[in-house]
Amino acid sequence: MSLPYRLIATDLDGTLLRDDDTVSQRTRDALAAATAAGVAHIIVTGRAVPWTRHILDDLGYEGLAVCGQGAQVYHAGEHRLLTSLTLDRQLASLALSKIEAEVGPLALAASRDGLDGEVLVGPGYRVQEGPLPVVAYEDPAELWSAPLNKVYIQHPELDDDALARVARATVGSLVNVVMAGAGIVEMLPLGLSKATGLSLAARRLGLRAADTIAFGDMPNDIPMFGWAAHGVAMANAHEELKAVAHEITASNEHDGIAVVLERLLG
Image 1 (cartoon, one colour):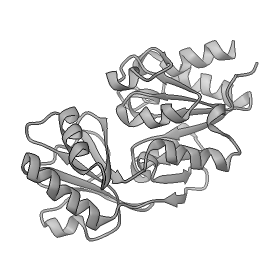
Image 2 (cartoon, rainbow, N blue to C red):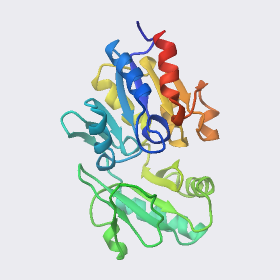
Image 3 (spheres, rainbow, N blue to C red):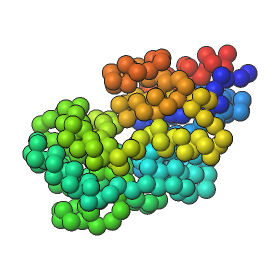
């Protein structure tokens, strides 16, 4: 029993996780069969480490995880941050002022660096319901008071795709702008993507792009698909990702990862 790939890279939300934040037994079994066959599995998520750790622990996952859109490489078994890249706060502040000059005031949130980095949420920012902890702030200076991995932006009227397009056109030479999910438009260090983080993690395992099959569902997965030998979009994926995928599988609710792995495992 062997796979044509030596590395499986999976996004978390909308991909590995079902909509209730759990991983189905079928998908767990398929991944276990792949790892038993000698294939490595790396989780690659937009979530920073503090919002990812509990999921990895629940999965019994002890390998490497790429978090924060590629900013962090985390060793789940050792609960240790191996690499971490931060956003230049002066540059981010300049980028924000330029976007707001185009579209008006934005609601903001930010992810602080580190294993226990808090997610700060400013006035008017809509947080998705769930167990993920956030810290509210009122004073704008608080946002910039400690190192950050990313800044989240929301607009009262523009939808996510439109906001990402305007932001990219306005400040694409200063920061990287990605749309990572419903209500999640992020500003990242220029040049950072899931592909850069994944390539770092893969190198630590002695693996390459040519060894890799990647699964995802959002535009922030496009660089990862561009890096990997084979990109698989979920049925629930954003149209921009489907357009560059080599293959489309079943949705995250219907074991899309397992469907592909079972076929490859024969």
